[in-house]
Image (cartoon, rainbow, N blue to C red; front, side):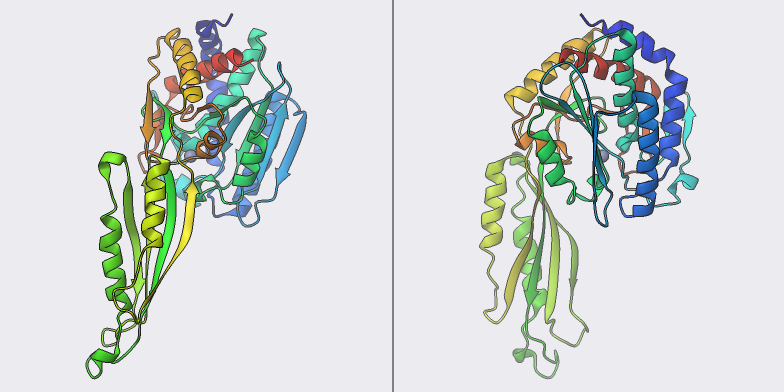
Length: 381
Ligand SMILES: [Zn+2]
């Protein structure tokens, strides 16, 4: 039997070593857009993981092209099916952010670029495994995936994630929590673009000859925003517009880029139908839709809820009230949930400010979540 309290005691004794690991990792800046930094970070992760966890049974590295590489490390354990541990090592912060937001621990508060989303999470996962070894407790086979392009939509890593998740028993996503809560449902995200073409003409001399692409796009924007349905959790946001050349020319080209979030597959289908049905107002204009659903909807499944309930029971033993929630942001958890796996997402850091200047973690939260991760991994063996 697990004693989460004993695990927490052990983890608490490792506080300084854990913070030292976290410092080194956070101080290696790893923006999604900088391959050189991503490679350097992954090289450090390789040596650190070896030091902390010993040799992996198998290591696969997939070239991410211009994006960060994906690394999959298998560690032996008890049972047939591995538990997938999902982490990403890229951050949204450009090089140089560390100088503005240095790694710092002040009381319970830890800061630094990417500390909350989600460098702390990997430190939890690693020390959770160490805690189980130290306690002589069984664990399932672990398949640790280090993703280098999560923050840019996991375009290179998605097929790898889906492949290595196929035979997994469950997935733990060490993404930042939502104010401590586990994310049992996440919205699906679509990124689309609508292009309009019109006919250019002199806006003063020959206005009737012109057909304005900007006029077309303006109508499209209003129509698309009208598809938003807060009651169903659907949002449509045209966040970028472009078009036209000069004030005295009817615009020949214009475009709108939009982010769509949905909480159910039915709503995703409704948006698809609406995009397919777009027609120009002026017959001389054309409208073209491009883009796709970037991450599928993660609807709250029975299996995920069951795993959450087990985690909640274990959390209660160390005095934690582990809540669940549904969020608008997507993660790699969406991909594995779509395969039918039970997923605990947002299992990582407690804190706040993902992608924001006030990004921070709670150090006590780090210790508690590490002990909880250990208890849950043991329960899955
Ligand atoms: Zn993240």
